[in-house]
Image (cartoon, rainbow, N blue to C red; front, side, top):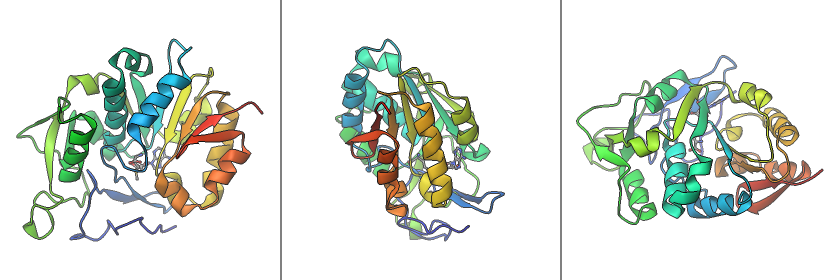
Length: 264
Ligand SMILES: C[S@@+](CC[C@H](N)C(=O)[O-])C[C@H]1O[C@@H](n2cnc3c(N)ncnc32)[C@H](O)[C@@H]1O
């Protein structure tokens, strides 16, 4: 199945991109997948997510944060930074988080301890850290991701949207484990003790509605009341009725794209 991309057709070189990587690949099921992501992707209010998580699990000693479709690590780092910036004290019980992606190439990049960041990423980082970035350092190393259409010099060598490779700080790398695994398999094995945040953002939109709904069905069976489920803007833009379907499975949307499981 071919999927139309959200804003840009990343498969065409020379298109402007805002993401920290723009790798694409085709799966054995002939699904056309993109690994594009960026720091503090703006379909989510990250400080609100952090505060909501802290409040929601205030009586829990430990919270199991599971991130599917983790790509190059941008999303894991956004979560960790948001927690640390909101409350270093409470952040501890949410970390380290477990991140999963089915694509070995993007997992290799995530595990490398380096990340490619564009000006958009750096601008977002400045905002979310109040100009005090201690999380990524410039480096001479180059992280090359196979089939990535992000340009080192920007389209037409303008420098716009160009990326640079940064070293990820230990504060971040020690708080995430990247795994190369299919989220459907991980979900089958998941055991929730009323203390899970399950993030699965901007991948269900690549699947057909039957496959996306099947995923929601299993999430609804697995998550216990009080646990949180987080999806992405692309998922809802592609499948217009996805939010209603999630709510029909005993979830309440407590913030945009953030659902809380309620008793059946
Ligand atoms: C568009 S990226 C989304 C990245 C990030 N979650 C975000 O919202 O910015 C989608 C990612 O899902 C991954 N993916 C696709 N199918 C998957 C599966 N069955 N299990 C785990 N990851 C999968 C892709 O390899 C890709 O890195």
